[in-house]
Amino acid sequence: MEIILIQDVDNLGGANEVVKVRNGYARNFLIPQKFAVEASPSNLKQLEERRKQIEKKEKKMLSAINEVIAKLKEGALKIGAKSGTSGKIFGSVTSLQLARAIREQKGYEIDRKKITLPEEVKELGAYKATIDFGNGHSTELEFEVVAE
Image (cartoon, rainbow, N blue to C red; front, top):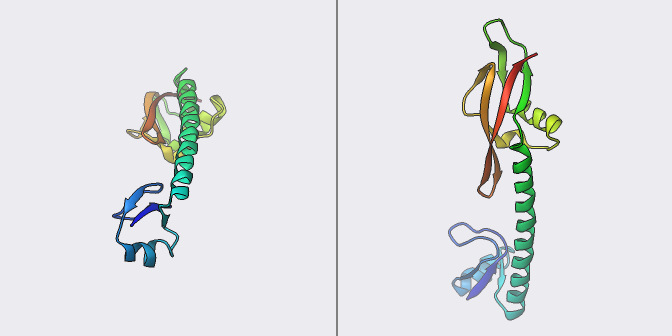
């Protein structure tokens, strides 16, 4: 029996996929649990329409991500930190401070969990961080730690 998966099912497939399974598995488990619907002609038309809408949404999201990436690459962020005379800062610069600096200086709200620092930032100087937007899109962000 052919069915259309409504949501991801382990070892079977992802949402909006048409898969072939045994009749009993579909009728007794997948359809009653609302994991799938039967692949009738009307349901296949709805699936095609849903795929078109998802594709449009992804294009919009991709253009927004590219706009943010372009804006972030325009210049290096400056993060102020208290430091000693030797150039070492008290504490370290974290992804939270970086997210705040992006919000204040660039005007974009980026979740701190998406920001990855390759090393601990404990001295004044220039560094790079990676921002992961998901769906395989990421960018490197240059920032500079300066004395307050």
